Length: 85
Image (cartoon, rainbow, N blue to C red; front, side):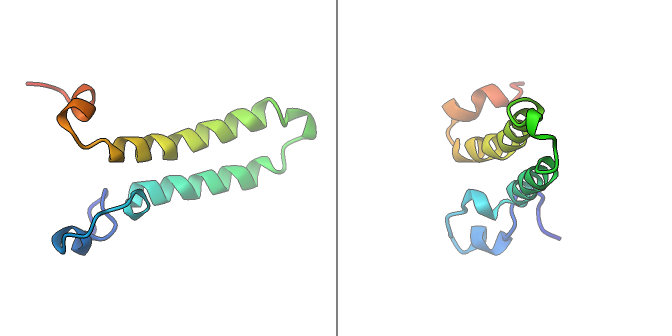
């Protein structure tokens, strides 16, 4: 079974540089964004700049935060996101 984080383990072992798009969690977030866009297409026109926009921005934020967190690899970058013991 694949790791929930890495879509292709063999890439790690062969020294291949993983990209954000290789992450299963990012792929699922991207599919979520596409689903939100399909769903919000049917929202009333008067909600275009209200609820529709808010839903879309929130969905995009999930995928964007995953990508941003994945690119941060150093101790200085990831320090605030980990519990120190």
